[in-house]
Length: 100
Image 1 (cartoon, helix red, strand yellow):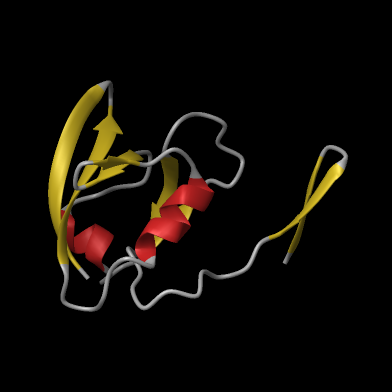
Image 2 (cartoon, helix red, strand yellow):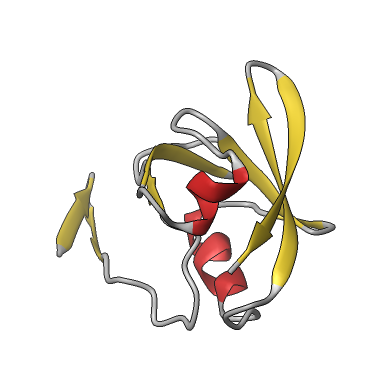
């Protein structure tokens, strides 16, 4: 998929990772972290309790700066790994145990 951002073109591809959290990110979110537009049923995010509207702010103790950092961080994990995902929801910080 080809995305157009103002005067810049960017290619959006599925991450080439071994695991997925199972979210549909908001690619136009401009804040810190990753805004979860929606989740995919049956995937780790849903099983852990993450919902659409959450903003992913950290994996374990590593803060997530943006969608590109998030995608790169997924490369550090393998199926079966367990991590703590921190999100902001309604101005509150919540942590979820996620198993890939």
